[in-house]
Length: 584
Ligand code: ASP
Image (cartoon, rainbow, N blue to C red; front, top):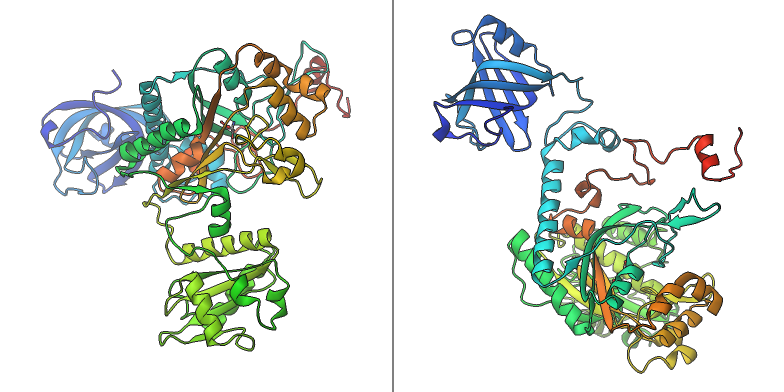
C-alpha cells in the first residue's frame, strides 16, 4: 500500500494514528537537530518532522539529503504541531516519520513549484508536467473537470445523448482553413480534421437522435491571435423539432445551472438583443454589459456647424466615460494617441469635459457652444465629472474603434469585474457577410444556417439585409456559444450554396452527402456550440484559456514540450505518397 491517506487529509482527529503517505518533496528545512519536510500531492501539503530525539541518525541523514521533487513514501505517527499554520487545512498536525523510502529521485526542477513561480511562460510550457504540480494550474484543471461533469449531468438530465463523431472527415466550413491528414491507403487523398462536427450532428438529426451533445475537439488552422488554440473544445449540441425559442431556453437553462452550481450565482433570465442593436449600442456583436457607456449617435446634434470632420462623416458617435473629466491634459493626449494606434485606427478623437458646475470644455469649442454640448451630454447620458469621447467616420469602422475605447476605459476603470456575470443572447444575425477583399458574400455563421422566414427573396436583391435564425450567447464580452436553426430542405440548401458562390458540381462534391440525406426525411432542427475553454476560463474568473488546458499550444501553434509540429522522415513521406520538394 503506497498510502493510507492523502497529503491534504490529516487533521487533529488523526493524532495518535500511524499513517502512510506518498508524495513529492516540496521543501525541506534543516535546523540541525530537527528536519521538516513538506510533502505534497494533488490534495495538499503535510508537514513531516524528524529530530535527534525521536529519529534514528540514518533516517535523519536520509531526510536531510532529500532533493526537491523527490518522490517519497513515509510511515509515521500523526502528532500535534507546536507552531500551527492556520493557512493550510493540515496546519494543526505533523507526521513524525519512522520509515522513509525514496520511490524516485528528481533533478532540480527548472522553476519553483509554488503558487507564485519564478518560471516564465516558455519554461513552464516546456515542463508543463511540473507546472501542473502547481496549485493554480492544478486547480484550473480540476475546475474544468467540474464544469464538464456538470454539463454532462445537466444535458443528460434533459434527455441528451452523447454521441462521438469522427475526426478523420472532410472539410466542414466554419470559415477557417482545414488541418489535413494524408491517407496512406488512398494515394493523393486527404482527410480534413473537423472544424466542428456540424454536418455530422445534422446527420444525427436525420438519424432521429433528436437531442445530441458531445464534448469534442475541433481543429481550425487560423492565423493565430493571442489566446487562440488551433485545437479547442466545444460543447456541441443539436436538437430536432425545435424552433429558436426552444434552443435558447434549453441552453439558457444550462448556463444558469452552471453559474449556480459552479459559481453560486443566480440569474433570473438573460436579456436578448438584436445584432443591429448590439452594433448600434456597443459597436460589437458580443457586448460586455457589466457596465454602461452605451453609444450615442450624435449626427443630428453635431453636423449643423462648420466642423468639416464631423460633417463629412457617415457616423458621429460618442460615449460618456464616468469620472474621467479629471484626466490631465497629458492623460487626455495619451488617450487620443491610444485611439490613433494602428490596432484601433481612429484618425483622432474629440472630447468634452463635463465640469462639476454643469459647464463643458471641449476640444471643439471653436465650433460648438454650451447648448450644443448640452445636447451631446444628454444623448450620451454624461453627468458632471464625466468625459464624453467622440469618434467619427465610416460607420462600421468608427463603431469598432469606439467599442475598443469603451472596453479599454472599462478595464482602466475596473468595471470588468471577473466575479460579476452578465450573460445575454444576441439574435437575428445577418445571414451573409460581405468579404471586403473579394467582394463576395459568405455565410456569417455557416452555410447551413436558415434565413428568417420570408426573407429568401431578399437574397437576390439585398443579400446583406437578410437576417438569419442565428444567435450567440455572450458572457462578459465574450462569445461563449453560437448556433442557428438549420436549413432542412434540400432545395433551399441548394439555393444557399448557389448564393455562396458554389457551382452545383462543387456543392455536390463537398456536401452531396448532406443534400442526399435531406431527401430522406430530415426533421426541422437546430443547435449551437459552446466554446468550452473560454466558458471555463470566464466561470473561473480568468482571461487566458491556455491556463485551463492541460497541454496547450503557444501563440505560434507549437507544443514546445513535445516539440510539435516537426518534420517527418523520408520513409514516412514515401509511405504517404507525399512528394515534398526536399533533399533525399
Ligand atoms: N458548428 C457551429 C460552430 O462551430 C455551431 C453551431 O452552429 O451549432 O460555431
